[in-house]
Structures are given as structure tokens and as C-alpha cells.
Length: 258
Image (cartoon, rainbow, N blue to C red; front, side):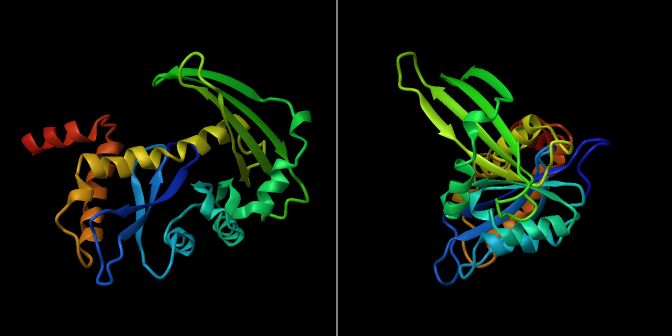
């Protein structure tokens, strides 16, 4: 499925969600891994994650069902895996992966880079939701020594937030690896895609929870929860592709005007 307009790079976010209240025969929660187009909000694929496995190999399985040529794949820190990176590149895609303590030695390598000598690329200030935030971005190219497949840039986005005047400043520093070079995409754009990864929480998981009341569904056993989630996705996706800003109001409109 092609989800971009001419000249616009596809960015696909992968993330999992457990369906609260759902149980298999052994009593395990139903957990689904989904792929979402960051630009359109359309769901591109979904797989059930069995109790005896986890999201990491299932992401590669889901990738194998898709055409990701030229696309950028974003995923949260557990998916910062060398095998996953190799598979993405082998299929013609690029990756942006956050590095956290599940890759402790790699994170220490990135933290030890000479960030004090690396100039700030951008500094943005935001006010909203009762807080003030300053976002600072640094990036550097890497040619050797990182040891992560096909990584050519390291990003260091820093976010400094203060809830109220006089409150203590909270600083969060993130490290991310990408196979995109500076000529492929500007670091500011890469950082935007990195932040945009969490759109899957707001544009899919939250909508299924709130607009469809998924976590309180009475369909709770066997394959029922996965089937119902699979039916909800193709309701959400056409509405997103039609630029509907509010899924709940769009559902009410089409229920009254079939």
C-alpha cells in the first residue's frame, strides 16, 4: 500500500498494544503489533504477538509483508536490534531507532561522543498544555566505531520542560541512530519523524480505546479481540485518508448518513 504523495517520504511507525480484559486460553492478554503511516494515520498492518514470543521478531515478520522501499521505519527502544536494522535496509528502507538502556553499551558509546564540541542545529521553544518546553537538537555523522549496522548519523534531541514558573527544570536527553545521511534528510526532519513516532499512540491506540471502547469490549476470549481490532482498523483508516479530524464525530455522521 502506497501512502505518500509525490516527493514525500513514507514514514511508518510500529508499536504494540495490549487489549485489557482480553484473555487467551492460558489467561494471557491479547497483544497486537501495528504499523501506522505517520503522514496519513492509516493502519498498514497488524499481527498478534503470542505469549511465547515478543514484538521484536514479529516486527520483522510484519515488515516482510510490506513494501518499504524508500520508507523510513520508526520503532521504540526495544526494537533497536541489529537484525531488525539489517532487515529494514535489505528491504530498501531506512530506520530511525531510539537507543536506551536495553542497549546499554551502545547508549554509553553514543553518550561518550564529543557533544560539547558539536554545534546546536536547532533550538525551538514551545508553550502549551500548561508547560514551557525548549527543544535542542544536535546531530553528528558517524563513519566507524559505533558497530550498529548501516548507522550513519547519531541524533541527540534534548527537551527541557518546566510546568510552572519557579518549578524545577526537567531535562530529558535522547539518543537515536539512523541510516539516513544528512543528504537523505535534514536532522531537523529526522527529529520530527522521531517525535512523530508517538502519533501511533494518539491516532490509533487512543482512538480504539476511547472512540471504540476497545478495552471494555465484551469480546474477550480466543481470537475474538484480535478480529474486532482488525475490523476497527479499516474503519479508522478510510476516515484518516479522508482527512477527518475527529474519528468519533465522523462515525456519528456516517451512522446517521450511511
